[in-house]
Image 1: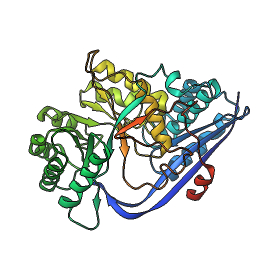
Image 2: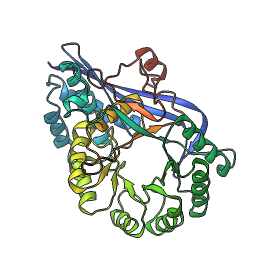
Image 3: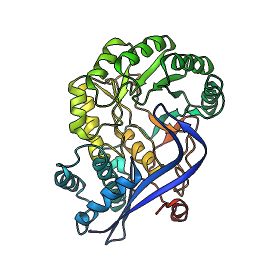
Image 4: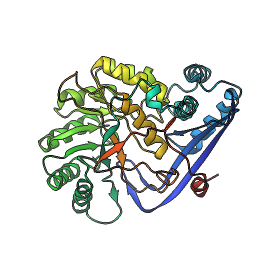
Length: 377
């Protein structure tokens, strides 16, 4: 079997209202998909996390290197692309582009062998994954102390047992929002906070100490990703577990985070950190260091499916016991017209539980008519 074509699709959709994390407002959602075709008619799909125009350029640049290659040789193709671009991109958009290619190759591999990707990765530990609801962004109108608790309570009513709040808007405002959300969801629902690296270590520690009383399950991206010393300072100062890694890439980048003991919870994005090939290696390394692994997920149904297959094979966070702590799925609940529309069968939750696809490859089918509605170029 040989690769005959590599195509990229830049997708874009407008939102009904703007939303903000700590760093920017956005009023559109974008995606960049990769399609790899073969001479045996087997087609694979991947997705790149990151700026769509730039990741598409990376994949388009790499595409000629893949024509005529065997798509089943995913590891050797990964190393070839990485080596040829090592002088220019050990992190960032080059690796995001490589990640999308790698996902498409795994999709082809599973379809060729008639097996779900999780089977090829070593076999599923679990067929259902507990999900946490990601949302609770800021809006242009209204009082966040009113609409954030209402939104969080809505997720709990849907059956989610955990929610994640966006912080990074000032220590006092974040503290008030955390308190209001905790009061709305009650003591039995897990609450995480995510600053999207809005703070330095001084402010992050101050915020962490003010919200420790609200039983926060983790404090995500408290400081910029390159500030490893800042991560360590925050981790040492707080009892709240520290999470991060969505802006880190490859096993080489995570090696530095793990050796420095900067994280309690690693969050590589499967569509950014190098694809399934690399993220499985990162997960194995995390287990060796005793660091929990919960992938960052912020994309379409392709990203969700790929993350589910990886989550299916990850070991529990804890050593073997009668009550293991399992890895969990980030399930984006914010407006994203593209996310489920491009799938023939959307990936949905049932009371906060998401089933792992069991069809060949990633176990999803792309709706090409829906795809065409969102193509930006």
